[in-house]
Amino acid sequence: MGSTHPDPPATPPPSDLNEVAQALEIARESPDGAKDPVIAGILEAALISIWDRVMAQPDSYVLTRDEFAVFNYFQHRFQGNKVARAARKRYWDNTVGQ
Image 1 (cartoon, helix red, strand yellow):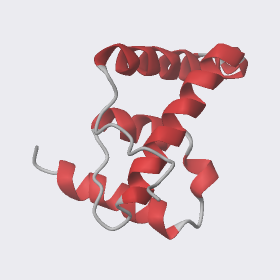
Image 2 (cartoon, helix red, strand yellow):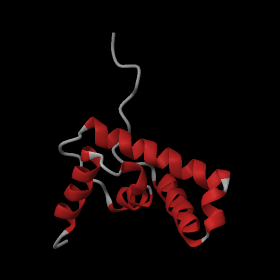
Image 3 (cartoon, rainbow, N blue to C red):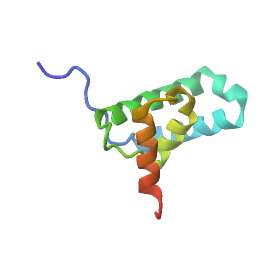
């Protein structure tokens, strides 16, 4: 029997990226924005998708700039998590000089 959980796409479709970016901006700009169920839902779904990709390749996955922005917004949830810390380090190691 195969896996019941399909592999997540490498990157979300552009429309989803725009939606996530807008939701992140609203959540950052307004305390009420982060409490809005639609905004929270968009960001939660994005975080789950990003975390799934990280966990699928915990020693090698490099976050994109947009993924890092969402991941960084939720960094408080990952305090003490070695996989999350390594993912952040890989992002910065691969961003320097670009």
